Each structure stands twice: as structure tokens, then as C-alpha cells.
View 1: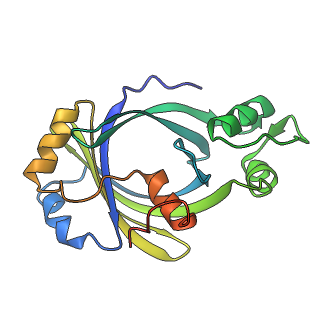
View 2: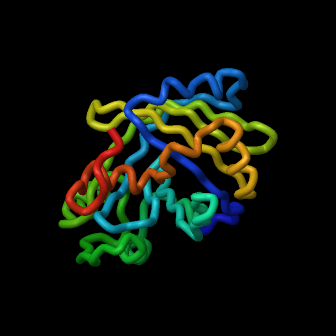
View 3: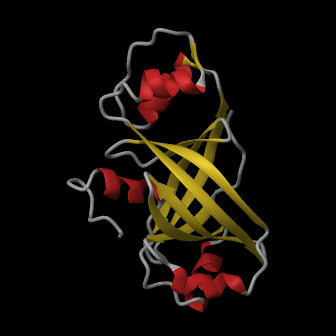
Length: 203
């Protein structure tokens, strides 16, 4: 089902260790703190952020890049319940820039979708990520400091998001973070899994 969420300008960075920046967030009380397992669908050239979280297929789309501020505008496109009908799966594959497949069912549960569609697809991969997140709301701006792991490899990520790009930019300047690379989750994972086609991995 399409989502009416207002798009947000995002800045995010990754590293094996961002502990030196914890002090920025330690002065604030987190609005939420939680762990989650998120299964990303990953192709070599895709730009769409597509993952399964809380038993929902979660799809985010990039809308715009502000080259001057070096920020990306993202919107939540939809959250789909399982089982997924084949027309939804065909649309998803097209959105991810993947070739369609023949379908043996009219609808697919989560396990059927992962094992019979994604795993068998020749150019689509599963990336199973465990996240331990701290979310902050500072004057309405969403910030995040998280530790995540895939296949036992741990890394940190920080993010700042707001509907107004100037507000994101002001926090980057205030916290002296502009020297760190802004890279979204999909690009970061592509660097890990497709190093021949993408810049070197971030750690």
C-alpha cells in the first residue's frame, strides 16, 4: 500500500568504528532504542532501498540529490504485507532493475518469496542485517547512532534526517561532520558485495 509520508532529506555515514562521535549523541536522551533484523534485497545497480522488516516489505525511493549540500531526498514508497501477489512481485523486480521470472504460485509468503524468488534469482541477493539503534529527536530532527552487523561483520552508522535540507546542513556544520562521506545503505552494501563495480568498501 502506498505511503503518504513526507519525504526527508538524509545524511548518513558508515565506518567500522564511529565511537569518537558518540559524544555528539550522549548529551541527548534517545527517543527510542531497539534492535531489529532487516533483510535487504540487493542488486548491482539498483538505487531503490528495499528490505523486509517486521514482516513487511518496505520500499524507499530516492527523489533528489542536493549537490551543494550533499544530501539525498528519500520517500517511503510503500509497505506491503505478505503474502505478496505475483503482480506486486513483478512490479518490484522491475523497480529493482531486475529481470522478471516465471511464477509457480499466485501469492508468496515471506519464506516462499525469499527462497523461491530472491534466492533463485540470478542477479538479486539477500543481505541479512542485525541493527541495534538509538534514535534521537532533536527539535523535530531525526538522528541515529547505530551498531549493525551482517555475517558477523560489525560496523557503525550515523544519520541525520529532516524535511528541510538546511536544517540537516546546520547540524552537520554544528557537529563538524561534513568531512565524513554521505552514503546511503544501498550504496554501502553494494560496495561490500560488488567491489568490482563500486568504490572500495568503507572499512
